[in-house]
Length: 153
Image (cartoon, rainbow, N blue to C red; front, top):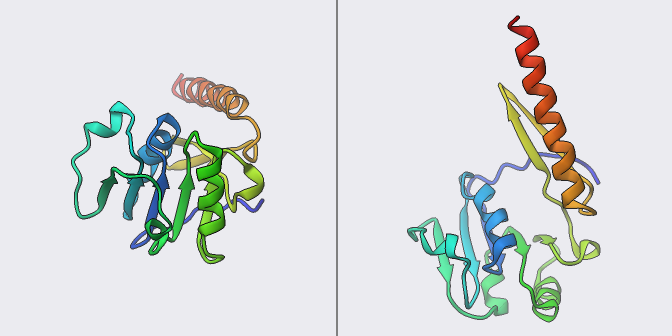
């Protein structure tokens, strides 16, 4: 994998799924200057508090291929392997996919990011182990906090 940061300005993101994983992906993407469609018959409670807008749509229906029509980036995050695989098959080669249930069908993995002063530090296990990634990120945050304290003594 080649680590990069992606400028999502004027891009369209489609998240297929409305559960906790979809929410986690959405909560990072919503701060980016892109439009986002979240497609799911049901949504995690956190989604229910959102105010849909021109930039953000919650589409309360089962996935259909047409949902991907204008997508630049696709996050596949349902708990139904058949739906997940169908989304991956329906995507065009020019559309970037993150298949949260099958890394072999992903074009990219999200990195856990730590913001510290004017730095962004990315931690990733290449989609292998999010719990391990979280543990290492916590260690890095602790190190940065202690290092910050040491600098001010």
